[in-house]
Every structure is written in structure tokens, then in C-alpha cells.
Image (cartoon, rainbow, N blue to C red; front, side):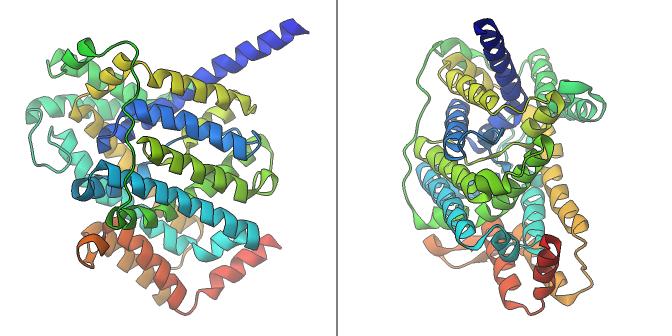
Length: 420
């Protein structure tokens, strides 16, 4: 019997390492884009996953890590208020999830559908992807994300970023088995290899870094301006979270909306995000890549995610590992982001299509149109600390328009019919 247990434990450990491998590319790419510490992101991903498992009584096999939805507000808020204030906004975004979890517990899971129907959330997701597209293009051409500096010569940058992009595309489309789930890692490997060939990798930081080092934790500061940047954006990942919970339920054959309950999964996600902000990491979200790996391997044991979290926390304390990640040149990330940011926008489009949102209706047309223009165009309302702009503004505008414009009962009735 003990031998079977040891074999089972060994398989869990190997499967946990495999799940982290699948999540790794997106996990570290997000902090690298926003100027956060990738070692801290690894630590907070592991910590967040463990907190989620604690709240959900270790019933849901998901892995939580860096959310791409927050890239735009983090970049904007960091430029205006600094990283500690951004982290205060991350803590506040987690509190939004926690409040939503209490609302769901009181009013039932349909509360989210009524508050945030597809016509609200889809244009916000589209805006997130398209608003970030200049950042991806600038980085692919060897510039900083805001195009303020040319970091790598244009010709060299294109010879790095485009093969990295093509590799990512080919692996995503033609890859087999588990390999198909790691296109980002494949693209990074190709781009990093070419960067060595062209001599644009600076290895001095890797040589100087110690093998073991404490992650560079940063304490949050609470600033209303930064909080207003971050909190409204939490609406889109809240819907993403529900989709992730439903998806993993479909894979495993369990209804996690009922047990352990959507209120528990939202609470776990909220605590994970707030904890990330307290330590200096990016907001957390459930990872679709890991759900795909669960489906492929048919390993439905939530203990596997415990091991993935332990491995993530362990890697966070390896100093040379973090230094190696920080040495990845800008064009490598830029090439891959040309696909990833576009994919975010496509998720929004598919949401409109899947739910058959009729854009010939004046109400739907108004919500989608105004949200897209405000989000992509960079509209600013207010002054100084109490101003709203970009993605944060468009999320609030979409929510308010949905509440005040007449004719929203059709979606609510449709939801009720589906529940019956």
C-alpha cells in the first residue's frame, strides 16, 4: 500500500511540475512587460493558488497566475503614481472580487450575468486587447513599450521578433499533445536564441545574481488615482474567472458553480489577487492553458496544483533564474505579444458572437460603440487624482450604460429561460 502511495505522490509531483511548465510563459511575461519582478510573480502565483485551494477546500484543479487584463492600467498607473500605488490598486481589485463573491452568495450566481451581460463585458475585453496593440508593435520593432526609446536596432529587432512570433503561431497550430500548450515558451526560446546570435543579450545581470535570493517584495501604497485605474478593470477578469470555473467543470464533469460554489471561487481569486498586491506581484486569474493541460492529461486531482504552486514558490527564490528572465530582450516579448494582445480582442469578439448579441439594436450598438471609442481612444474624464481614462473608464461606462438604457430585460429573461 505504501508503495502505491509513493508512486501516486511521485506522479503528483511530476504532474505539478508539468502544470507550472504550461503556465510559465504567460506567468512571467506579464510582469516583464509591466516592469514588475518575475520572481515575485512566481511567488504570488504559488501563494495565490494555495489560498484559492484553501478557500475552495481543494476541490477545483486550477492554477492562478498573472492576469493580462491588467497590463494597460498597470502601465498607465505606474507611470503616473509609481509601483507601490499600483500595488494598492491591485489589492483593491482583489477586494472587488471579494465583494462580488458576497453578492453572489446572497443573490445567487445569476447576479453576475445580470450585472455584467456579454454586451458589457465583450467591448471591454476588445478594448483591452486593441489598446495594448501599440505596445506590442513598439516592442517588436525594438522600442520601449511607449516608443520613447529605441532599445534594439530596428533591423535586428525584426529579425528576432518575427521568428519568435512565427514559432509561437506554428506551435499553437501544429503542435501535438502537451507541446501545443506551450507556444509562448517555444516563441521565447526561439527569440532568445536569436538574440544570442545577434549579440543583444546582456548576461552581466545573470553572472552578478546570487543563486539563492529573496524576491524583491514591494509594499503597497493606497492612492485613489491608482485605485480608480485598477478597480474597474476587475470586471473583465471576473467574467473570465467564471468562464474558467465553468470550463474546468466541463473538463472534470463537476459543477463547481454549485460545489464548492461560485462565491467560494470568486473569494479565492480575490484573496489571491489582494495577496499578490501586498507582496508586489501582479493580479491573479485562472489560467486556461492549465485547464487545457488538465483536459489533455486527464489528471483531475487538485493536489497536482498544490505541487505546481510549491514549485513556483521555490523558483521565486532562485536569483539567477529571475536575472535570466529579466535578460530577455524586448523584441522577443514584442513578437509574441502581437499574437497575445490580438487574442484578447478576439475573445471579446467571440463573446459577442457566441451570445448572439444583436448590434442592429440601438441599445447594444450604443454600449459597444461608446465603450470601444473610450477604451481604445484613451478618453479622460476628471482631473488629477480623481480622473478616469482608457480601460478603467470604458469598463465603468459600459456598466452604467447597461444599467440606465432601457431594453436590457431581454438578456435577463434569456438568462432565466436558460436556467429553467
